[in-house]
Amino acid sequence: MSADRLSIEVARRMQVVDRMDESLQAVRRSCQSICQLTSPITISRFAFRPLLDSVLEGVAATLQHNNINVDVDVPSSALVAGDRELIEVACRTLLQIAARSMPGGGEVSVSAVASGAHWEIEFADSSSRQVCRDGSNTFPMAVSAQLDPMDAIGVEVVEHIARRHGGSISATNCPQGGVAWTLAFPAIANRMAA
Image 1 (tube, one colour):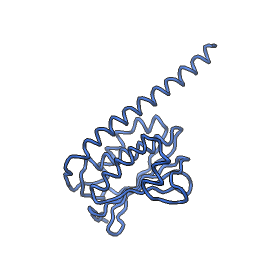
Image 2: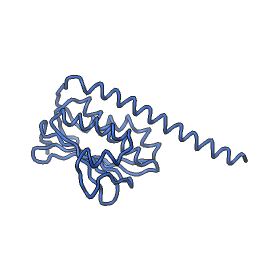
Image 3: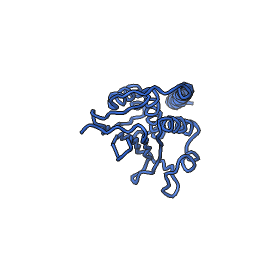
């Protein structure tokens, strides 16, 4: 085997090892998250944007490694009442799912809106993945079968967090490709300041 071919093969194998390490770290974080899910919820009122900025900072290396840009449309005045740690876990998990779905790069858009009695956070990725059959956004039946096991576990963790807050999670296929995950928290809806 030539030196060039050997270098290419070593680089390819290192990428596989890196991917496996990322997966193991994600499993570890998911297990820690599951342990948090059984503890009592501590409700506090906080600004969502700083929490999201902190989560983005925590996953910056993964996003940069996968060449993923993040577009955030969340006003600094967005307030939420909930368990800060659990909402942070849900946001981190959805960003990690998006990153794994776009190993060659892409974009994630994060937006938050007050919609009637609901407070909604959307994480939309530009992957080629389509998880909902026939335009359905039913969760988890139409979605979980289309995800790899790690992502399916992550989505179940996020669903559990949303339900503990009196909310829900849904998934829709984006018309331009990719998936939009929407967290809705009707029980803790707080109007965003104008």
